[in-house]
Image (cartoon, rainbow, N blue to C red; front, top):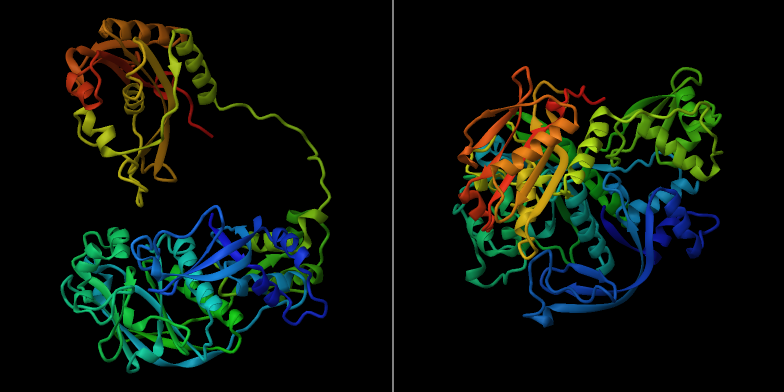
Length: 619
């Protein structure tokens, strides 16, 4: 969850807008916490300004000054004069839920607190001016060669910016990249000075990696060496390097240009320096591009409504998105309608509520309400900036927050029951106890692995039923593990300095693709053991496997087999009496030992507890 630094004076000003009795500053943290936001601390922060791109940082004393700019990549250690000092600020540090991106800024948070306090309840309608600008979308952006097909846009006119509002704008943009955009993959946002652009017909199309040149944000605008191609930006610009993986396998890159051909940005990587927003900017153009239509729409709705809350004087102007003969007008702030059963809502919350009382709770959370059928059902109009409301139960949660969890009377459940443990957990506990009794030490290794660790080091081909991670955090965590032995070997490798022999085991889940299951994947409980020592061999692990299966009261037969990870003739497969293969045991091949930097023999066994013991499926 992101930590948001909310400036207290600015937030309080938006909370008390229109209030007959202003909320005191000392009561603000309590009201915010009742809305489900965790207040980490109230702190004094030092504000720093990147003089290259204009990004502002709030840093506590413990954090110290920023070392580089996360927006443009400027290294402040190399050029300290590019880091400005804006003085101190009083902030409330909030641990926020990613789904509530509409309250990441003082405007959105102030709007929510005003409604909760009854200062301004009900659905807020934001006026929209008709479109003047059209963005023509290249159909090739839907191809795999340059896939980033969705774009929505808006214009914000009559803007008056300060350091504080620019900071809020840029911080909101980056927070939305994380919360809604999944680090720019599903959605990325660009904001530009509209007065630096020409014409009323913009283009969102795809160009070759060397198809044009422009100056990316943060580079000197008057230096010819700053004019880079899209391909060079991915190689030379710090932001380009950080997000180059989003362009993997693309042969053409998305580019947004105005009527005169001026480049606004290369989504989702970087804006151009020529369109940079400054304190003198009076009209802004905003785009959101991405892979998910719903995500880009919600992100734009949050941007324009939060900016309208921060700067009430601005005018939101729509933009026409043209895809061939199709036309779409964005942003669309039409609320979503949901029906809520009054009796069900009251029963779920646990209090007596009629339609009027429930409707008032919804209005305090910013929703519009109307009666559908004489008090039994309410039609709730959900604001277009609320990306977290996807089901009537989400609205019931809103009503419970407005009612106040502190006002609910705790009650004991009418009947007490004790759940039975899952059979697989009972037998896993037995397996652990047996292996401990046999002299083994238990370890718990990482569930995420990589193809190199799971297959490459073991001289085998990757399994077709492995579960891959779509957005891995590192090259070492690209898939869910399909066996436990790599984790045991890694543990032995980092414990080479200790005396031999060493006996380790693990009992844990592995994950496999299974199209017959509801989720498309299944977990299977495995048990594995490893022995390393000067004189360890096949006979040792065979004795352990025999004792282990005997103590589990499981019938198991041993049959010769071949396996690339083991020494030929020193490996066997474990089978149930009906012929079902449940595991393998033997002495590891020298090449496998070399891959882990081990110089002594290692014998291992690994088997499926669920198959061995014929454990029924998990409930």
